[in-house]
Amino acid sequence: RLLVALLLLGALAYGGWTWFRDSSLAAVRAVEISGTTSSEELKVRAALDAAARDMTTLHVREDALRSAVAQYSSVAGIDVRADFPHTLEIRVIEHTPVAVLVSGDREIAASGDGLVLRGVVADGELPVIKVDAPPTGERVGNVNTRTALTIAAAAPDALRRRVDRLWTGPRGMMLALVDGRSERRRRDLPRRPDSGARRGRRPRPSTRADPRSDRYSDPCPCFRDQPSTVG
Image 1 (cartoon, one colour):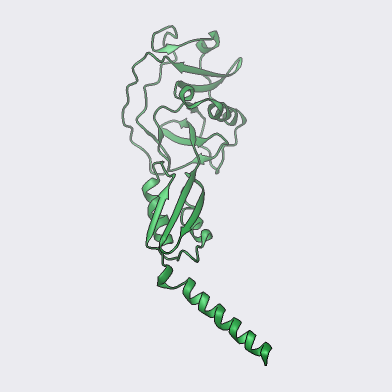
Image 2 (image 1 turned 135 degrees about the horizontal axis):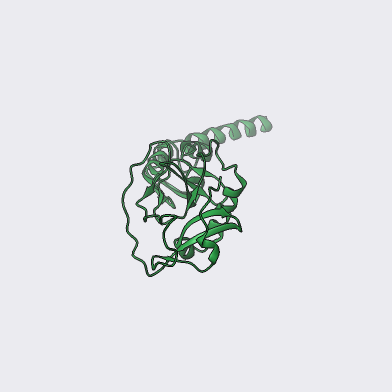
Protein backbone atom coordinates (compact mmCIF):
# COMPACT_ATOMS: atom_id res chain seq x y z
CA ARG A 1 0.00 0.00 0.00
CA LEU A 2 2.85 2.39 0.75
CA LEU A 3 4.35 1.75 -2.70
CA VAL A 4 1.02 2.40 -4.37
CA ALA A 5 0.61 5.62 -2.42
CA LEU A 6 4.07 6.80 -3.40
CA LEU A 7 3.43 6.03 -7.06
CA LEU A 8 0.13 7.87 -6.93
CA LEU A 9 1.77 10.84 -5.24
CA GLY A 10 4.54 10.87 -7.84
CA ALA A 11 2.02 10.79 -10.70
CA LEU A 12 0.08 13.67 -9.18
CA ALA A 13 3.27 15.68 -8.68
CA TYR A 14 4.37 15.09 -12.28
CA GLY A 15 0.94 16.03 -13.61
CA GLY A 16 0.92 19.18 -11.51
CA TRP A 17 4.40 20.16 -12.71
CA THR A 18 3.46 19.54 -16.34
CA TRP A 19 0.37 21.71 -15.98
CA PHE A 20 2.28 24.50 -14.27
CA ARG A 21 5.18 24.31 -16.78
CA ASP A 22 2.85 24.90 -19.73
CA SER A 23 0.38 27.21 -17.99
CA SER A 24 -0.13 30.94 -18.48
CA LEU A 25 1.65 31.48 -15.17
CA ALA A 26 4.93 30.95 -17.05
CA ALA A 27 3.88 32.10 -20.53
CA VAL A 28 6.41 34.10 -22.54
CA ARG A 29 5.19 37.68 -22.72
CA ALA A 30 8.45 39.55 -23.34
CA VAL A 31 11.00 38.49 -25.98
CA GLU A 32 14.39 40.22 -25.93
CA ILE A 33 16.39 39.62 -29.11
CA SER A 34 19.99 40.73 -29.65
CA GLY A 35 22.85 40.03 -32.06
CA THR A 36 21.00 40.39 -35.34
CA THR A 37 22.36 43.20 -37.51
CA SER A 38 21.98 42.05 -41.12
CA SER A 39 19.45 43.20 -43.71
CA GLU A 40 17.32 40.23 -42.58
CA GLU A 41 17.08 41.63 -39.05
CA LEU A 42 13.39 42.56 -39.09
CA LYS A 43 12.35 39.20 -40.52
CA VAL A 44 14.54 37.29 -38.06
CA ARG A 45 13.15 39.25 -35.12
CA ALA A 46 9.55 38.71 -36.24
CA ALA A 47 10.05 34.97 -36.73
CA LEU A 48 11.71 34.48 -33.34
CA ASP A 49 9.16 36.63 -31.54
CA ALA A 50 6.22 34.71 -33.02
CA ALA A 51 7.75 31.33 -32.20
CA ALA A 52 8.76 32.33 -28.67
CA ARG A 53 5.30 33.57 -27.69
CA ASP A 54 3.96 30.06 -28.20
CA MET A 55 6.19 28.83 -25.34
CA THR A 56 6.66 29.25 -21.61
CA THR A 57 9.83 30.13 -19.74
CA LEU A 58 9.71 26.67 -18.14
CA HIS A 59 9.30 24.86 -21.46
CA VAL A 60 11.53 26.46 -24.09
CA ARG A 61 11.67 24.51 -27.38
CA GLU A 62 14.95 25.62 -28.94
CA ASP A 63 14.43 23.36 -31.96
CA ALA A 64 11.26 25.30 -32.79
CA LEU A 65 13.14 28.60 -32.51
CA ARG A 66 15.89 27.35 -34.82
CA SER A 67 13.33 26.09 -37.33
CA ALA A 68 11.68 29.52 -37.32
CA VAL A 69 14.85 31.18 -38.65
CA ALA A 70 16.27 28.28 -40.69
CA GLN A 71 15.36 30.02 -43.96
CA TYR A 72 17.51 33.06 -43.17
CA SER A 73 21.08 32.60 -44.33
CA SER A 74 22.43 35.29 -42.00
CA VAL A 75 21.62 33.18 -38.92
CA ALA A 76 24.36 30.78 -37.82
CA GLY A 77 22.76 29.85 -34.51
CA ILE A 78 20.97 31.11 -31.41
CA ASP A 79 21.57 31.17 -27.64
CA VAL A 80 18.46 31.15 -25.47
CA ARG A 81 18.01 32.10 -21.82
CA ALA A 82 14.69 31.95 -19.99
CA ASP A 83 14.00 34.42 -17.18
CA PHE A 84 11.02 33.21 -15.15
CA PRO A 85 8.23 34.11 -15.10
CA HIS A 86 7.65 35.77 -18.50
CA THR A 87 10.87 36.83 -20.27
CA LEU A 88 12.82 34.96 -22.95
CA GLU A 89 16.22 36.28 -24.06
CA ILE A 90 17.51 35.19 -27.48
CA ARG A 91 20.97 36.05 -28.81
CA VAL A 92 21.40 35.56 -32.55
CA ILE A 93 24.78 34.40 -33.86
CA GLU A 94 25.29 35.59 -37.41
CA HIS A 95 27.31 34.57 -40.45
CA THR A 96 29.49 37.55 -41.34
CA PRO A 97 29.75 38.52 -45.02
CA VAL A 98 33.36 39.28 -45.97
CA ALA A 99 33.05 39.86 -49.72
CA VAL A 100 30.56 40.20 -52.56
CA LEU A 101 30.53 37.75 -55.46
CA VAL A 102 29.76 39.57 -58.71
CA SER A 103 28.53 37.87 -61.89
CA GLY A 104 27.13 40.24 -64.48
CA ASP A 105 24.56 42.39 -62.70
CA ARG A 106 24.12 39.97 -59.82
CA GLU A 107 25.79 40.50 -56.45
CA ILE A 108 25.73 37.87 -53.71
CA ALA A 109 27.29 38.18 -50.26
CA ALA A 110 29.50 35.33 -48.99
CA SER A 111 31.15 34.45 -45.69
CA GLY A 112 34.78 33.56 -45.11
CA ASP A 113 34.10 29.81 -45.10
CA GLY A 114 32.39 29.98 -48.49
CA LEU A 115 28.76 30.08 -47.36
CA VAL A 116 26.55 31.88 -49.88
CA LEU A 117 24.41 34.43 -48.02
CA ARG A 118 21.48 34.78 -50.39
CA GLY A 119 19.05 37.43 -49.26
CA VAL A 120 21.66 39.34 -47.26
CA VAL A 121 22.35 42.89 -48.40
CA ALA A 122 26.08 43.29 -47.82
CA ASP A 123 27.92 46.43 -46.81
CA GLY A 124 28.96 48.60 -49.75
CA GLU A 125 32.57 48.67 -48.58
CA LEU A 126 33.16 44.93 -48.83
CA PRO A 127 35.62 43.74 -51.49
CA VAL A 128 34.42 42.40 -54.83
CA ILE A 129 35.26 38.96 -56.21
CA LYS A 130 34.25 38.43 -59.83
CA VAL A 131 32.89 34.98 -60.72
CA ASP A 132 31.89 33.44 -64.05
CA ALA A 133 28.50 32.38 -62.71
CA PRO A 134 26.68 32.67 -59.36
CA PRO A 135 27.15 29.65 -57.06
CA THR A 136 24.31 27.15 -57.40
CA GLY A 137 24.68 25.49 -54.00
CA GLU A 138 24.83 26.65 -50.43
CA ARG A 139 28.62 27.04 -50.57
CA VAL A 140 31.14 28.31 -53.08
CA GLY A 141 32.77 25.43 -54.93
CA ASN A 142 35.51 27.17 -56.92
CA VAL A 143 38.90 26.80 -55.23
CA ASN A 144 40.19 30.25 -56.23
CA THR A 145 37.04 31.94 -55.01
CA ARG A 146 37.24 30.07 -51.70
CA THR A 147 40.87 31.21 -51.33
CA ALA A 148 39.89 34.81 -51.99
CA LEU A 149 37.14 34.58 -49.36
CA THR A 150 39.59 33.12 -46.85
CA ILE A 151 41.97 36.03 -47.45
CA ALA A 152 39.15 38.57 -47.06
CA ALA A 153 38.03 36.92 -43.81
CA ALA A 154 41.55 36.91 -42.37
CA ALA A 155 41.99 40.64 -42.89
CA PRO A 156 41.18 42.98 -39.99
CA ASP A 157 37.92 44.85 -40.52
CA ALA A 158 39.66 48.18 -41.15
CA LEU A 159 41.92 46.62 -43.79
CA ARG A 160 39.11 44.64 -45.40
CA ARG A 161 37.21 47.86 -45.99
CA ARG A 162 40.18 49.17 -47.96
CA VAL A 163 40.25 46.13 -50.26
CA ASP A 164 38.49 47.03 -53.48
CA ARG A 165 38.65 43.64 -55.22
CA LEU A 166 40.47 40.30 -55.21
CA TRP A 167 41.37 38.25 -58.26
CA THR A 168 43.64 35.51 -59.56
CA GLY A 169 46.51 36.86 -61.64
CA PRO A 170 49.73 35.49 -63.14
CA ARG A 171 51.46 35.82 -59.77
CA GLY A 172 48.69 34.16 -57.78
CA MET A 173 45.98 35.79 -55.69
CA MET A 174 46.05 39.58 -55.87
CA LEU A 175 44.12 42.45 -54.35
CA ALA A 176 43.70 46.15 -54.98
CA LEU A 177 43.49 48.63 -52.11
CA VAL A 178 41.53 51.87 -51.97
CA ASP A 179 43.68 54.80 -50.89
CA GLY A 180 42.63 55.88 -47.43
CA ARG A 181 42.78 59.53 -48.51
CA SER A 182 40.26 59.09 -51.32
CA GLU A 183 36.66 60.14 -51.03
CA ARG A 184 34.31 57.20 -51.24
CA ARG A 185 31.15 57.93 -53.14
CA ARG A 186 28.16 55.65 -52.79
CA ARG A 187 25.11 54.97 -54.86
CA ASP A 188 22.10 52.72 -54.41
CA LEU A 189 21.78 49.83 -56.82
CA PRO A 190 18.64 47.92 -57.82
CA ARG A 191 18.65 44.49 -56.24
CA ARG A 192 17.32 41.20 -57.50
CA PRO A 193 15.02 39.57 -54.96
CA ASP A 194 16.79 36.21 -55.10
CA SER A 195 20.25 37.47 -54.24
CA GLY A 196 21.92 39.86 -51.84
CA ALA A 197 23.05 43.16 -53.28
CA ARG A 198 24.96 45.83 -51.44
CA ARG A 199 23.74 48.88 -49.60
CA GLY A 200 25.48 51.43 -51.80
CA ARG A 201 28.90 50.74 -53.25
CA ARG A 202 31.94 52.73 -54.11
CA PRO A 203 32.75 53.02 -57.83
CA ARG A 204 35.09 50.37 -59.25
CA PRO A 205 38.15 51.41 -61.23
CA SER A 206 38.38 50.76 -64.92
CA THR A 207 40.96 48.13 -65.86
CA ARG A 208 42.57 50.84 -67.99
CA ALA A 209 42.81 53.31 -65.11
CA ASP A 210 46.22 54.55 -64.14
CA PRO A 211 47.09 52.60 -60.95
CA ARG A 212 49.29 55.52 -59.88
CA SER A 213 46.27 57.81 -59.47
CA ASP A 214 45.51 59.20 -56.02
CA ARG A 215 42.35 57.11 -55.72
CA TYR A 216 44.01 53.73 -55.48
CA SER A 217 47.11 52.68 -53.62
CA ASP A 218 49.46 50.40 -55.54
CA PRO A 219 51.99 48.94 -53.09
CA CYS A 220 52.96 46.12 -55.45
CA PRO A 221 53.62 46.15 -59.23
CA CYS A 222 51.40 43.08 -59.56
CA PHE A 223 48.37 45.27 -58.97
CA ARG A 224 48.91 46.75 -62.44
CA ASP A 225 48.04 43.41 -64.03
CA GLN A 226 44.66 43.05 -65.71
CA PRO A 227 42.21 41.40 -63.28
CA SER A 228 41.17 37.93 -64.31
CA THR A 229 38.00 36.13 -63.30
CA VAL A 230 38.32 34.22 -60.06
CA GLY A 231 35.77 31.53 -60.49
